[in-house]
Each structure stands twice: as structure tokens, then as C-alpha cells.
Image 1 (spheres, rainbow, N blue to C red):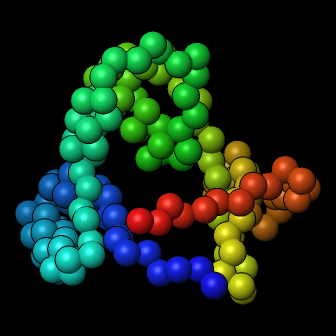
Image 2 (image 1 turned 90 degrees about the vertical axis):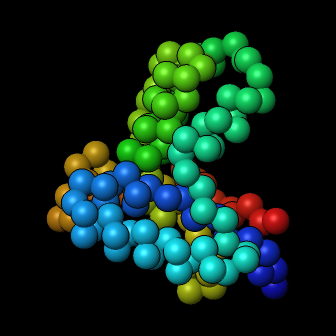
Image 3 (image 1 turned 180 degrees about the horizontal axis):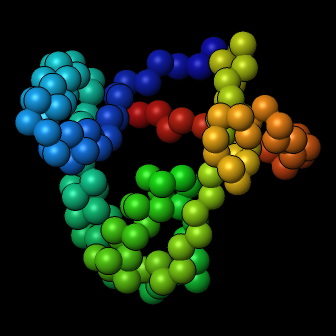
Length: 137
């Protein structure tokens, strides 16, 4: 049986997105305030995470970084802007599927990400799939 995680990390990407409209920003703050009430929850912001990674010290640039979806690409670009580590960034799309047993498998998404493309896209063979795992404290 899989143990229950002791902490839930929530990445706050709402604050920046919601800041464009006052009512949306207020609702985002209220939502995050509700989530913060649980002592097991940690709210993470991109600037704080970038500060923590860069504070670990200098590193030679990597030959390439792979950004998983828009969020992964954005983080890689932000780290490169701060530290110069990722001169080449490739973005890939990934789809996750959860089985009845609760296992999650991932696969590359079709190039055309429209909903209708999912129906006509032929998935790669299972040998090309990989399993994702959540890290647990």
C-alpha cells in the first residue's frame, strides 16, 4: 500500500495569472489562504523556487533542457535567464493516465493538442511509455 504523503506542495501560478483582473486576484488569494490553513500544505512560488535553486551555487551550462509542457518550459527559461544553465530548451507535451489501481503512466502527447486529436492519435507502444512517481516526504 502506498503511504500517504506528509506534505502537499502547491505551486502558486494563480497569483500572477489572476493579477490581470481585481476580482480574479481576490478570489485567487482567498483560495490560497484556505489551502494555507492546513499545516501540511506548502505554497510554492516560482521566484522562491528559482532563488533556492540558484542559491545552491554555480553550475556549468547543460547541453540541453527538456521542458515538460508550457510550465516546464517556462521554468527552464526562467532558470536560464537567472543562471545561464539552459542555452537549448526543448519542450515536449506529456499526457498522464491513471489506472483503476491508482498507477499513473505517461506518454508523449500528440503534436496537435486539440481535443479531437486525442481521439485520432495512435499512442506509441507501451515499451515507449514511462511511469511517473510522486516524491513523498
